[in-house]
Length: 537
Image (tube, rainbow, N blue to C red; front, side, top):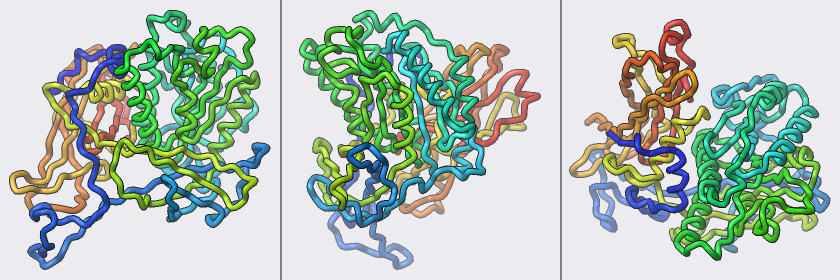
């Protein structure tokens, strides 16, 4: 059993910035692409056949996917380019483009109707999406009011059915809110925006809350990346707000600056893996007297010596500020999200140095055009090992964030059905697509590891009880010792009967990949009359 009861969300946000992460040790990065022997052999020894007389050769190779927006010098989109018009280098080395997709290749079918994450995964699993986020924790109340007005003004100009499925989020220091799940219905987004209550961000006026605001910014980026990683399509994340608070890092200890830089690098990698392009929009517009403090006045308009806007450019997005037509800026980001080319290549550089930044540059055969994509990437370590007795702060943050949110995490396909034999019990099926089975060794069989957490809530959304448990599942003895296994697992979950509980959320984290999946269940009297929810993917 993993003890997560002591972890509160605000504490987790602080620990992201100012605490070390010793309990979850990183696993080394995978070996460079090379020929490798089966586990029973010593590396470097000659290959030997298995019992059937077959030889096994394995190679590890990674692919880089680039979403590229091409414009002319006036900002007009260019949509008629071909594969031969693009040239890609990584760390100044030429790369071979293996796959090329034209703009608009995966837009949803005009006859489709998407009104949830489940609809998106079922109807258009590779479609591009928009994720609009209202930053209410670091933006003055009057600026956020103008941002909401501008967003509504933009939506009212759109057709009744949006081309790109759009999700609306709002974040404060206390709460992460899914205002509206993915939808193509313009009016539903407007209605959700009208009914969303904005609290006064009094913490933005007090320097003592700087750490919490930094932690919330990093934590929000991580939460969105982890929740949407299961959708392979491109995602435009439109961050409306200031991002980071103003702070002079000359007064911050060196280890604090190092932690911030490490989390910046981690966020960029997570956004890359989730295929998210970040756009930041400052709703303050053109200002004469800067109301965000003297540090913000002479630095980035998003505040602070570490510029939040750098995160946008690192992912291939843009930082838009200094204009009063915020609705037009939102339109620019949405336009770019529907008009990108996709290039895929396999890096020729086999170096595994995790500290070296791999700079990517895309040039075009026409010198009058501008290609915008992410700047590059770092190699990164795999997910850390899970210690049930002393879970790391990062592991606790991932699990608690997924449990507290109503955002659907779809990186681990799973379904939940009632157990007809036992009241208040359910059977959780984790699909084979989301699992990784380890290779057999001389002492251990093949196994799959997960962490499963259950959380119950009352009718006001207040958490009642949370439990987490690390689980290991051994593969049957007749399974091959290596290779891919298409085999799912099932877990029986029983909830303590609580008359106050009306909803439960089940979170599954696959240890080998760090990916997360969630499912929501009705509890109490309404569960008897409400049919079970459709399978969550």
